[in-house]
Image (cartoon, rainbow, N blue to C red):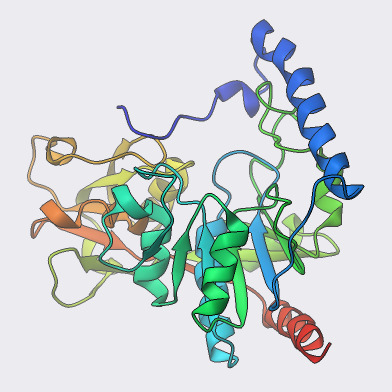
Length: 339
């Protein structure tokens, strides 16, 4: 099924043969991106600083690793700690991408981008989408924000940052270890060692799995689902309400299988429907020929609210991290604020 996003090439992660053309292009990509990094590091390309701390949440691989759930959790924690966070994003896949705009929960996703609209919907924080991250940050500061969170942006070196958080998928890691397009890497693996925090997304793994998957200097993030929200309004339902039932499960994210597996772990009979990441949904996309409840990720739900009915439910995703991670992060921010 088509959408604005693309499916992840299987050879990035399954050990299969890399197409010859992709292997030829990978050194070209490495040369161009390597030159750009060197130009910024040597000051030949200018970085711009903001008068407030900047936190970048990103990854060195293409595709989803759990950045948006972490960004949402981060904004909520910062607000609880007394900060006034704002979120800067490019707004991948949006129309009129050259136009900067404020995004709120009611902004159409074709104008704001699915992830920025989701962040605004979940947090209520100021969200600014702009190709120019520096301009987005300045607008947020002018709006009263005292800390800027960049949803994705490790490779956007023009905006100086104070804290970098790398998010890595525990199952996929760095795939075949090759740079784009032969592999999933946007930058060499060594780049990850420069980040201040490494968060390992374990999905719904247990605490025992967290200990085995996360080594020294890594922080485990687990994802939890326990409820379903009707898209047309109404009371939140416990996910256990669907246990023992068959449902249509919809996921237009980078790793749809993770969502399907989480539902199956809740003893729900899943009829899976995987769409391309950032897919732009139409009414016909959700006509599956049988009247079963349709459970979808919140990232999909923000694009389906306009034509939702009583059968459509969003499944909220909660990101859980150790208390020590939040202590370490807020301590770092307080030191920055103190000068």
